[in-house]
Length: 101
Image (cartoon, rainbow, N blue to C red):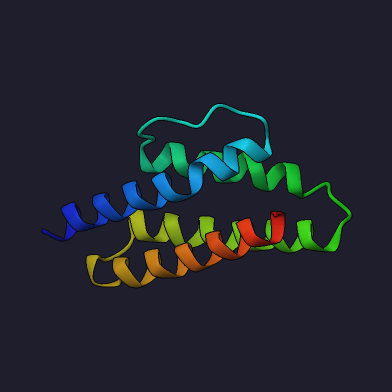
């Protein structure tokens, strides 16, 4: 049951944030990305933001870095912690997309 919930949460996060993230780096929105593909998209955006000198974009890069850590930990960590880690990742993704806007 937990694994199914985690998969659904990853799917929901990807559906919510992929379009905005992909648009920022002028990529097509991925269709049904795996958790690894979604994390890779976040990393590509983070890498682009890493060279930015604007404060809000640097803030977004830091938020995406934190989101990546939480998502990776949710994939590899104990099932008991996964929902908390995914919720933290969602917060950082939301903060990043707001900073980019």
